[in-house]
Length: 266
Picture 1 (cartoon, rainbow, N blue to C red):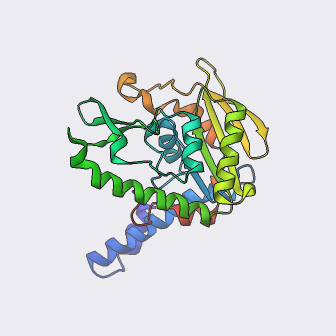
Picture 2: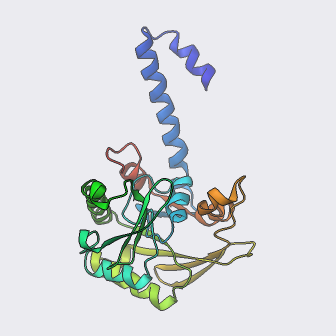
Picture 3: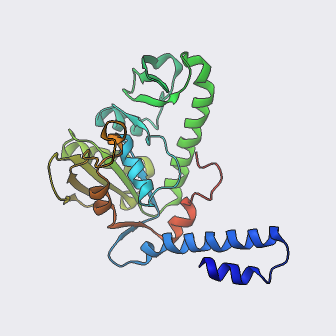
């Protein structure tokens, strides 16, 4: 490809024009590579695939496997129970980030860790300064954008897959979550949940259909095999996540709706 581009660029006058041409070809190649899974008959296809948490590795592995390109509210949040998530869905995320509910819990080298005492959610990556008030307006704006994107993206999609890692949930909990999402977005047909639970030491991914629209997957989620397990363990078991997620794909329509080329990805 590089040799092909160099040969063609000989006939294009101007270094700026040559650079633009190369970039367009590279973008086109990337698009083709990412769209190919959408053409596979072996994959389940969705217009939108989005993380519901409850750990960072869920969204991280969706992104690594080219299934999520934009940011949504639950990507980097944790600690809330499945019942608190259901309450938020039922209430259309009311009181999600009320200032009076936010309490600092500890400080690490990079961030102030903040807990929402009403919803149970913990913000581990958002607050930079020692005072919540210094960051609050900026963070509130960011999450408002993400909720607006979350709602609009689901409304525009025909089929949605929510991916939710929750080890201590029960099938009834997930059925309640599915029903809440279906009521919220008015169409049970387009709502699907992939519910992931950790099975330490399990050497393969096991998937079970709970009912129409709900699939349960168990895997050794946290078995990170990289060079520094202490730092990067949150990324999870890359091989088993890849095995799980390779059976899913964005539709061609979904790819162009959700592609990272869209402005305001955060």
